[in-house]
Image (tube, rainbow, N blue to C red; front, side, top):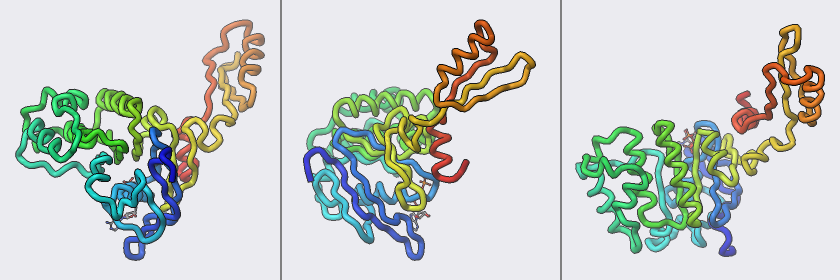
Length: 282
Ligand code: ATP
């Protein structure tokens, strides 16, 4: 175990009765890394993350998070870990500001509650009862509570579910700034665009196993995948060539058309297409 590693998982297994949720997962997350777990509903992502957070027991395997086994780690370890669970926090009658200030007291070195509310875009809702917030605003409050203690490692389980597109983009900036400060981040998401934007590496999980771990640009051999060059021919038909040398194809087309190639496009497999193919849904 070196100081460069935030999370080590070996041979992790978890069953619920007859159902196997995690069937032997190996994983390493480096310190300072943003790591995204992708996978279909029921793949075992939340189970894995909750075991790493110390909220679920495991049946087999080794787990080391910030140098300790989460199953036995104490309060000082918990203060170093920030958690945004998938289910929204159960809220009382407190206002947003009261909730954030209340939770700040649990940490030895909390961030300033007003700053945190501003960071997640809740300053204008500070005096509103937390229970009455919209779904997306409640999610922002969850995120606020997760980052309040200046965690070294932040777990985000589907953090932007229910966010409108503008809120999602603001959230991405927040994650990038936390990562810029050196926070290690493990997130699960169903938004491929989110994984591509934020993650240094993604791990694709299906049926309790990791299919591949790679940088988003490399997943499923994307980087080496052939490009599709499409254009509209002089007779009006749509033409497509799949090639490893799209620049040459485009140059030849430009010469043949003596200038602009009608409705030219050059595409490679997107992360979403690659992911869907990997999990067998394309
Ligand atoms: P999603 O993307 O839908 O959140 P996930 O990848 O996070 O899915 P998990 O929530 O880890 O998947 O679930 C993995 C499997 O374990 C599923 O088949 C689920 O039904 C089952 N499961 C999860 N929690 C429990 C539980 N407390 N009791 C019984 N079965 C469970």
